[in-house]
Amino acid sequence: MQGNDKYKEIKFPKGFLWGAATSAHQVEGNNTNNQWWAWEQEGGHISDGSISGRACDHYNLYEKDFELVKELGHNVHRSSIEWSRIEPKEGTWNEKEIEHYRKVIQALKDRNIIPMVTLHHFTNPLWLEEKGGWLNPEAVDFFERYTRKIVESLGDLIPFYNTINEAVLTAYVSYGLGVHPPCHKDINEFYTAGKHFLMAHGKCYQAIHETVKDMGFKIKPQVGTVNQMIYYDPVDPNVKEDVEEAGRIDELTNRWFLDGIQTGIIRKPFGEDEELDYLKGSQEFIGVNYYTRTQITPRLNDPKVLELMMSRVGETTDMYEVYPEGFYKQLMSVKKYGKPVYVTENGIATKDDNQRCRYILTHLKIVHNAIRDGLNLKGFIYWSLMDNFEWGFGFSMRFGLIEVNYETLQRKPRPSSYLFRDIIKSNKISAQQLKKYL
Image (cartoon, rainbow, N blue to C red; front, side):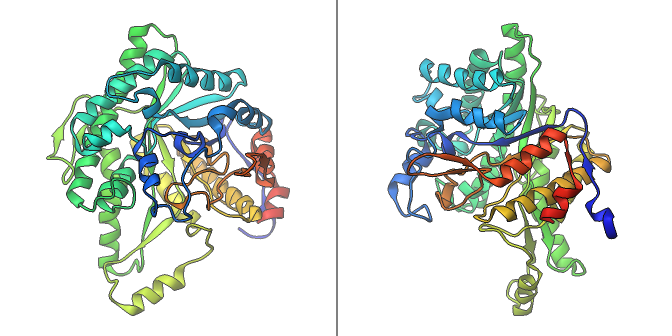
């Protein structure tokens, strides 16, 4: 763009959904009955030496938090239900905790905020972990049973379901890469867990719709996946090996799961190309989580290649590189599935809130470009609503629109939250906002 075109007002479609996200273990506190809590207690796993502990105490402070959400103008909020609270022992339901989540979801609806509920966000009940976690084929049926219980109890309140958050990434970091519990490093276990997650998604999808019908609920829920869509960028696009390796990894981590839902076929190496009727077409929308790219080459033993990789790195956050070009490419890559798309996570770990403002505007420009170019993109959900326990990084990473003082639990909206509020209120980015931050 030249001249003033760079700062031209950007409008979003009428009815566009705007919000932020949290997950239960990261904000609630005292989720003592899942595998993450147990792993934290061992010590030595979390980079800043912390444990989740009371986290943000959102479990008790959710009403105050949702008042802030309302004041900041959000019309959708993505959160998760903690499975280990609902089913602390195999086949035993905690009705008190189910009632708690009913109050949480109702608190959103009372404030005219649409709830988008995630049923699995990284954590497993301890009893499931003791049975082998997602390596155990029974996990598929266990998850279906839990899903039916949630829908029977809360389904009259929930218009949007995310079945499993970042299923492929969860399988990889837990069973292939070995950096999340149970910390296995076995590529075949990654394939096994990935297959079971895909099957569980299909079963979950069917369970939600069947249970809503059986219960006679008037609501017609939308069910979708949430997919971590890292952009795999060949270090040298003119080198065949780099391009092929980037394509191979993209296929393993980004494509086969969505293709499996589209076709109903669990492709090799995760399956044996078996076709499952309950899997085919099992989503009403696609959730895209995007943060950054990963540079890809099989030529890591070449010092010149490593030097080239370093020279290509641009702006960085406290956690990763800022690479909005990859966001556009990954958004457009899901257009072929013909489903509505929501950005279910996009955000930045930084203590510099001006950088957060720039990041939000830069990535919202990408969202607008994708809509302009024909993607049926219906909402943007920032990660995250508030600072929280960022898994293996502990409390050291600050993603929140809202700053949290972990000693006093005081919440303080950052300037970026007000920038976001103003965008939501007008459903557009003004030329003045672009000039100020970009």
